[in-house]
Length: 419
Image 1 (cartoon, rainbow, N blue to C red):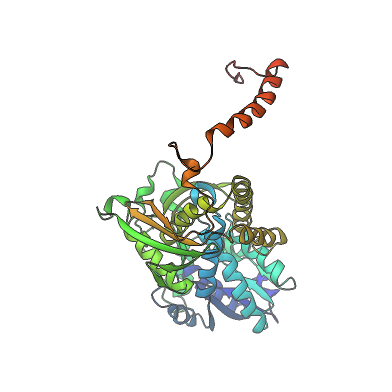
Image 2 (tube, rainbow, N blue to C red):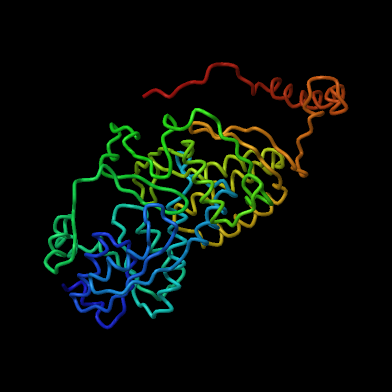
């Protein structure tokens, strides 16, 4: 194949999952006489019981696989996004976006150590991941080439579908079973699961066709609310139900609690990087549990202007993560600003997880809270003196009357543009 001849004399590092696509690309490169080394990331993905199985599956194609343990990086990434409340369209917790920058940083480092010249990835030519892999390689290893097999016209002609891939591998005695058509595809990591494609591409198909893997639908959750106590220091969770844990342990425990209570399942027709829309059903039980609890804490410690700045930074970070720009200067600066703003967010939040919801129960130990019960009381108290509000109201009235006298105020119904 002419398109693969250009890689002779170079080492190609292929990002693999051990599936049909991965095996097909690696075997085809090997058959073309290319020096191939495959790489896979351990992201704490719940659908992979033993990550070393990837090694065994890829060995059948004649390639060695380097497994890079990135679970700790993945957990830290989850905490970064929760701290920034960086949700994307539909409340999606950017679970795949986190996974991609963690994966690329870890695998590219391993590839550089193994003298890889070309990074090959299995992302399709229609989605976000092709852009993420490409950009992260460009910024982290600008001299490294990028090869996208599923944008290679010759390879697409040779393998138009999974049937042709399986037939190709079977010719070499490599086990490859296409199986019945799936209802949807799933991408998994410690942060959560993204379900999309196949039947989910039709907006006539209910999101309920998804069979949750990290928990249950709210209708199948227990009828009793589960109380959860989450302790935070400067916007980072440090303990759950009074027990201090590592970031990985906290994420895994939060995933279990949120999952069994039907928390964190969302739906979106999201805006892709390339300009199209994509439909997804997402599971992120732990991130939703931690995120909602932290949101209640932020309400106690952030003033109005700090809150508006935080919201702006949160949106910027969310878009940057989604677009594959985690390492960009704007993203790094925004994260530093978030860390500064959330320094006062220390204390314990008790929430109730119940049938897909996370309810506020109480706040304790929030020494930096600017909420004062006396100031907000409608009853007589030692807080804000209601009489002193008279002066503030009079100052406000000057501007209001000025606008009215100038004829700039209208109470007429808003005109609607005609089609």
